[in-house]
Amino acid sequence: MGSCSTLRAALGWIRDSGDSDGDGFLDHIDRLGTGLSNQGWKDSGDSIQWRDGRLTEGPIALCEVRAYAYGAALAGADILDALGEEQDADDAAFWRTWAADLKGRFAEPYWVETPEGRYPAVALDRHKNPVDSLTSNIGHLLGTGILSPAEERHVANLLRGESMSSGYGIRTMSTGAAGYWPLSYHGGSVWVHDTAITVHGMRRAGLDAPARAVVAELLDAAEGFDYRVPELHAGDPRGQSSVPTPYPAACRPQAWSAAAAVVCLTVLAPRAG
Image 1 (cartoon, rainbow, N blue to C red):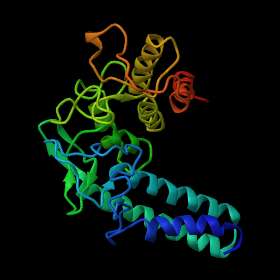
Image 2 (image 1 turned 30 degrees about the vertical axis):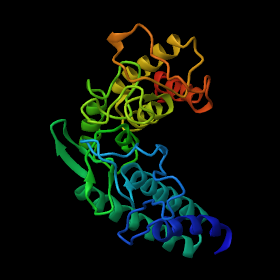
Image 3 (image 1 turned 90 degrees about the horizontal axis):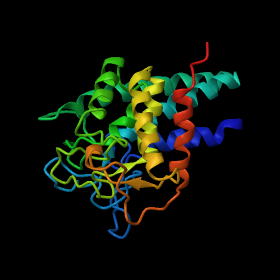
Image 4 (image 1 turned 90 degrees about the vertical axis):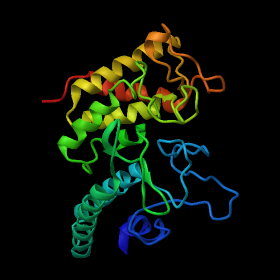
């Protein structure tokens, strides 16, 4: 195993232990009924729901976790290549092939068509059906390589659309979903760090114009909070208020919201070269 034993163990977990039902996708499920039913960053009990408001049955295979796994496999392969040993090179080739297979298998089962358009579903449910709500989760796919450039442009446009863009950041769930509520913890509110992840992905995908537009919204939101940015705020449309509506129980300031400033600075700075 050598110096990369921990890396190999982590990649092996992605391939094997993180898949509860053997379909090749990482998923999560609370088997005992005493833990979190949702184990992505959106961990509230109603955060993963269908467009008609139904809750999702687990195991739940989140769309963004596909992108995380894809990126981890390619980054792991790069590290193994850098070590320059024969076994490392063989393993690196394996993980690049594994990532390519994951990308191919992602395309068909996840994409859905609804009155809001065509987009990646937030997750697959226990029956492998794509959960069809339009959410900010798809912003985490941008810049990872799991989408084609045309798909990235399409997703970015959807996230900038009226149902997802509050004017002070990207909503966690579309206004077109039955469960939408602007003060729902993960079902319509705006989380600054979540929006920043989308901005970072736009930047990586070369979509500088939409990235800068969303940064401008975040900066306006920050000004509305006197630059003590909370963990989340309401997803009310911008025209409804001159400042963002606070979420009553939000931490303020909050560390991962503050870290979004680094992403904003990166997007606003000129590209090197």
